[in-house]
Length: 98
Image 1 (tube, rainbow, N blue to C red):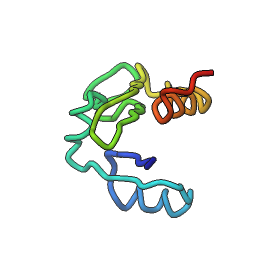
Image 2 (image 1 turned 135 degrees about the vertical axis):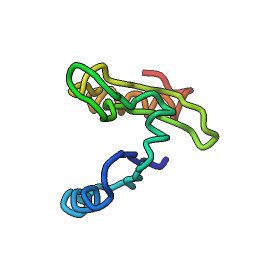
Image 3 (image 1 turned 90 degrees about the horizontal axis):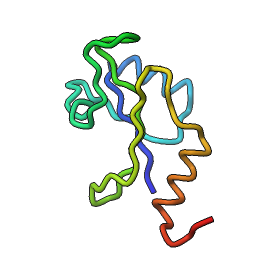
Image 4 (image 1 turned 60 degrees about the vertical axis):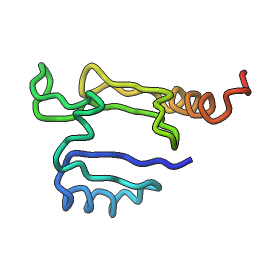
């Protein structure tokens, strides 16, 4: 399993953050915001933000099939770590059910 994050920020700002945080996964830069728009997470104008991506999480297999998606309705929404781990287990091992 591979984890990557996609952000629509200037690469220098992201590089400084990644160096300081020591994240264990890749950060990809979407300067054009094409990927964010394709997945429906780009928010041009909203009540709580503008020109920003809504927090989102997608579990996508190597074949490009989306098995799980979460797109927040506000800038402050996101699934819990337990919810994320449950979905990863569900997708990675569909025959194992608690």
